[in-house]
Length: 467
Ligand code: BG6
Image 1 (cartoon, rainbow, N blue to C red):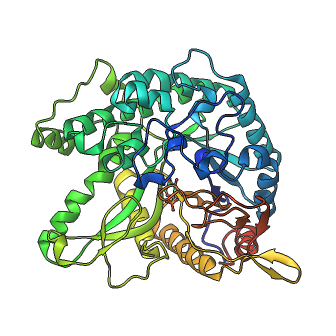
Image 2 (cartoon, rainbow, N blue to C red):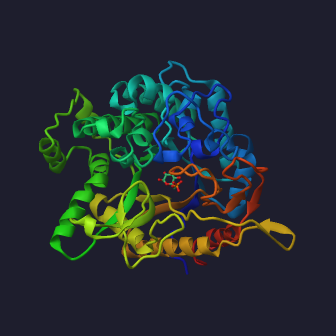
Image 3 (tube, protein in one colour):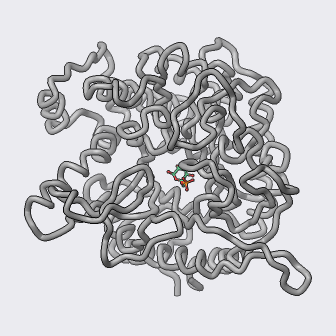
């Protein structure tokens, strides 16, 4: 017996900057990622392109057909990937798109469709064109709304009838902690005031709503979702002060979720502006644009975290782009991220209660060190730890479906090994498919099926009955 609906979209997710490579081919411009040699943890050095695993990625640019064939072999019904904005508009602000860049995505999309795989495309996955960062300070400038609008119109028109699902900004709430990755803002985070951050968020919110509006004008059947970094916040103790700290921490996510699903700034956000003495420049028409709300919500989920009013009293842990306090009830991954499938069920329920929209789990997975070995003459990885992680999280989604949550689908993050976003490592592997490349950039780039490959194939073919 399966708990997943027949229409459930099983699949995987990747992003352009972490997989494609070919960073300067066929007219592509540079993106901020070409400079982030250490991932999100080190600031961008605007003067050099450092040695950087992302420049070559896993060469998806040339091997997409082979990779999509492997995804099809697992039975994928959906593939989430991103379009690198700088392939289409190399500097971001041109009037006309780069045809060679579009040609590449024509081929990727057609290849997916030839296997019956739905493309789910992220418009901006941490890859603002570098020129826009250097000259405009990224989304600090309102001009980016116009450039983004042009980019959206171009790809929505080009892929009308082929691409039904789009996401606007990957983990849009990463802005608060990582304005460079999240919003292409070159100015140091420490120099940005709350006013600046709220203004940047406003530009992104207007741009995101504009994307929804344009998509629906082009084809009302196109579904556009938002995407947030989803973390469930637990109070560290039953001390009410800790729950008040959760109330505060939840604002990180609610800020975007509330506006993108409801279509207006709720009172609590206006109070935030007042609290920080911020006056947001809202142009005529902006508030009308915000009314174009998303068709579904989506999020990444890797972990939960504990929050306290007195964090100094507790042991610090590690988190996906956030600070956490160690939860004594949870195990953690080799990178210190706490493993909590129940948090996924809780978060799904919370989003369903609050927003009453279909939900797509567009990232979830385990980053681990894998060992390539030979079994019966075939190279593989025996990754039962990854199967355990995925199995428990898929059970949690099944539980949420039983709770009454409408879940559209699940795209496992890094379905093929790729370069990590936070640390720019290859050795932090997520895939069902092993890619022969190491942290020094050495390797054949050959692909090998891991044990989890066959496991996921079985999960999909039984629509989640065999978990
Ligand atoms: C998400 C990002 O935050 O987490 C992905 O959207 C990223 O781009 C994923 O790869 C996993 O994080 P990491 O740092 O392990 O690659």
